[in-house]
Amino acid sequence: MTTRRPPWVLAGVLAGLAGLATSYATAMVLTIRESPVVAVAEMLIRLTPGAVAERAISVLGHLDKPALVVGILVFLLACFAGAGALARRSWWRPVLVWVALAGVGLAAVVIQRSAGLVDALPVLVGLLTWVTVHSALNDALRREQRAPDLVSRERRVFVMVAGAVGLASIGIAVAGRFVGAGRRHVEASRRLLRIPGVTRREAPASTSLGLRGIAPWQTPNEDFYLIDTTIAKPVIEPEEWSLRIHGLVDRELTLSYSQLVARQLTESWITLSCVSNEVGGGLVGNARWSGVRIADLLADLGVADEADCVLQTSHDGWFCATPLETLTDDRDAMLAVAMNGRPLPIEHGFPVRTIVPGLYGYVSATKWVVDLEVTTFDQAVGYWTTKGWSAEGPVKIASRIDVPRSGDDVEAGEVSVGGVAWHQHTGIASVEVQLDGGEWTRAELGFVPSLDTWVQWTVTLDVPEGDHELRVRATGRDGATQTSVERAPDPDGATGWHTIEISAR
Ligand SMILES: Nc1nc2c(c(=O)[nH]1)N[C@H]1C(S)=C(S)[C@@H](COP(=O)(O)O)O[C@H]1N2
Ligand SMILES: [Mo]
Image (cartoon, rainbow, N blue to C red; front, top):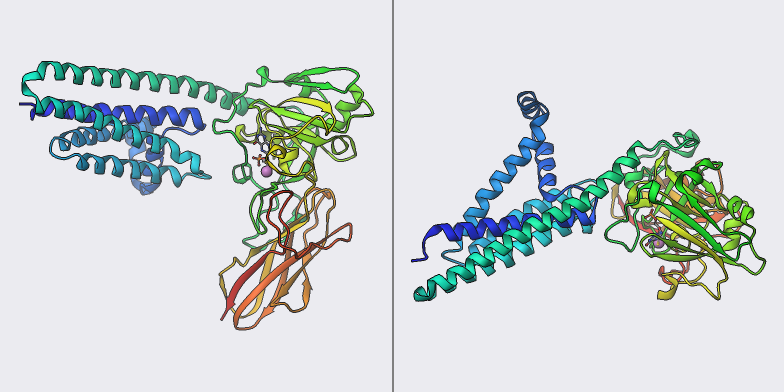
């Protein structure tokens, strides 16, 4: 008698809504992006031929996007109902529906600009919810089927489970909405923020050698590598932010955001790199940072002689110990408030982070920084130092071939080769390239404004037909040439020459 359709359809719809709710809440909690449903809408917009899109916009006006999202939701409801009806006969058919829907969501999410693994999580959480909730509801219905005389009891069980799922979904979605609202609010504050003294400037023309395929000298914010230990990025309103500077100082200080930005701002081009970067890897970027020099702040407060490091702590509880010297010498170590002329992106540490030229990020570049304690290295350890990484993290000289890419086929003859090289706060004196273990050929270097940034390099090589190996090495302004000894990033940065294979025909 319970082969009646409606409860099965209802189970499908409820499971579907529950999955949407958990995936939406996950998206809100984890990222500043919209939910997978919106990602699908954006994908459809991108896939829509321009003429059709224009027609839709002219018919619907500014309601085109909301209309699309509503359309997707209606379609989803139909799929949920369908999955519910399928469950009457077999347990696996509805699973196919859930997996197919999740597949579309996943595709939409991963093609988004600078999408990462974390962006896939809402879809996976949604899928998991669909499958578990639906099977729980179906179990209740099947039990009812098997024991017709107990129908009224089993029916109550089903109604209760269904009701609980419905309420939980509403609760989860509302909670997600609440968290999301905080995020959106901070994102809005950030967009509206105008920080006096922060200027937008193009990279000096001399820094770029114009060879296609080399990493642009200035890394756009949205392409800058991201490394941190948090999943849900801290969202901090500038008015709520403050920084406490204490420890071995004559005078403690707590700075508000407006007090910080009222101070003299310094702007400089600085390349940031990660100790985990492999030879030839991409965990490095160059930006124009605006902020307050830490040396000036510390000088105002008076630092005790025995101090040799600063323990930095972030809003999310991450911490690192930075050699005091690097924060007080003539380099532009700063509390940065802007990146490439814009307030820091949330994921890069909004509203304030530290930047120290010449040190790897793990010992210096604290995002969402809220506490600086002047102390000594025998008192303080950093997060990564407790996990076996070296206490001090001066960057090592490095060079990378960007063009051609390893595995490329090139035309035999003159081949343009190019890439980047960096040794922050020491500077790059020369870059050389070697074909198949032969002579080293010196590359042309871009002209950079300081010792703290990477340089682009290019060279033209005569490459005969056949398979070849290309290597690069750099020499710093201190006269030291990059070592050929290959070492893994752990514990203080990778070494070795970036080597690629190409074939010429
Ligand atoms: N709060 C916080 N700050 C942090 C980290 C972190 O995990 N949490 N990681 C550090 C590391 S290892 C690096 S390489 C840089 C990366 O900065 P980015 O994500 O802006 O490129 O941030 C540093 N600052
Ligand atoms: Mo890092």
